[in-house]
Length: 490
Ligand SMILES: [Fe+2]
Image (cartoon, rainbow, N blue to C red; front, side):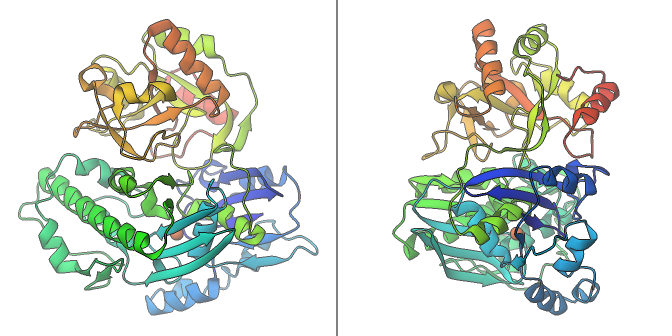
């Protein structure tokens, strides 16, 4: 059993030999606190249904973390007695007789989560996040099962923290709403790029990323005018700067190894817009669907195993065991209705991929506003398309080197944007999910039936959640959601 907790998006993963038995996010259980940093008792209960662990693995080195916290002035966290992994796990019902506990470094857990779920024998692993212990950017060589660190950028120099600081600067929530910053970037122009770079960034070439000041507690950047457009322009500027820094880091990683396979991990790997700008540098890319800290529960378990597991699916969480009612959903959708689906095992990772989704016909005007009204979110935000894999190139210009995108990790330009306004961002891009024959059988069958009836191979797919709450998890959540919004959930 691997555990990640006490920072944000706590999770548990269970593996046995080369199989992943379970992986779930704490936020989706019990109190349903978005990106919950603590282990929820319901999550623990669900995980233990898959067996009692004979090894416990913690996802970071808490001694190193405490030293960094002292350095960062976070004394309360640094001297907390409750955050000793053994004590913390015991408090949450994870204490077992004769079960040893091991710990691994934060970035090493990220690296293992990526490499040991990847299909690659050799790879270069790049990990970029906000902060763990000290590492913020690491490059690793992975060969024949062995992972060796080649490069490390350390706190306070952090690309992830800089992005988070600007997320706060434009009025959003740190470590929660970076994806909104990315969406807002489409509405702006990077007019502050040079100003931000010159004020905060010392160097971002040759894989090094150095900051002129510590941005952990925020930045005091002020645009010329305090308008909504300025906020969009700041978002566009920090996004462009991130993309350029990322490109430089990737070029450096290329020079360090001969491998053409990239494993990309850490919270920054959730930036699908940036991911699309580096895809042409590699022959193959693997980003585990939960590349942020929640994925480190699996990473820690894999660090202990030190070997690949068989990666079959990201549907690894709570199981709503009932048939996927393909015909009923297609019937509803063909009547121009919106409907929810809560079926099978929940997604591990932040994206709803057809098991905890709100679905609609993506064609024609008005649908975006209708779904946005249900979800009560900003009108400008688009939704994502889920498309039968074999049709993706007819509708989208996929980034170079990206044939399929089953986990919504890249953006692509739509070739027929006028036909699908609900799933197109203002810059003409879409965060595409391709659904292949080996992905969810239920969701695949639904898309096939939808295509047979309508000749449209895609659906609008957004997460099934009550505003401000995490995704629906179990049967009761699905019922509550249905009552709250008066929209049928299958
Ligand atoms: Fe991390």
